[in-house]
Image (tube, rainbow, N blue to C red; front, side, top):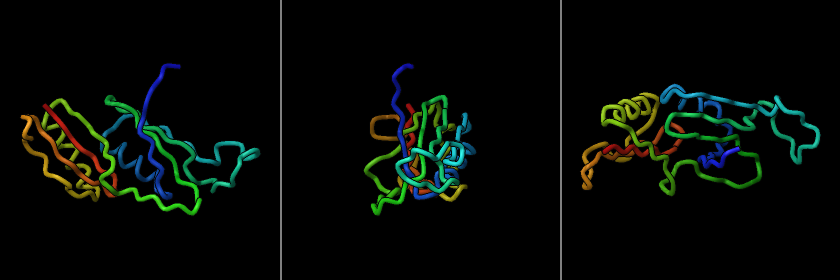
Length: 138
């Protein structure tokens, strides 16, 4: 198997909804597995059988992966600016289409998509799950 690197996001029980939304916005190939799809014996914890064990969304630009967070007493915020998913498009129009789909799905503008000081285009949108999507285009 070839090496690869993919962002992995653990959602608080909303992984299926988030990845299905992203699939609607960006297209690609969605592969979602629930814990009920696996044998439970030998698991070091007892997950909800309806929780997402693992999901991937394969896009022409790369792969996103995730799963539902297990209840371990830790609270991790999904919304923040410590990370973002940077999506580089071929044209500003393509970026605007993705941005509009995220906004139509309940997102909010973080930074308007406009000409950047370096001469390209750049903007940010928080989707309805709190994930920051940054869009860039030459």
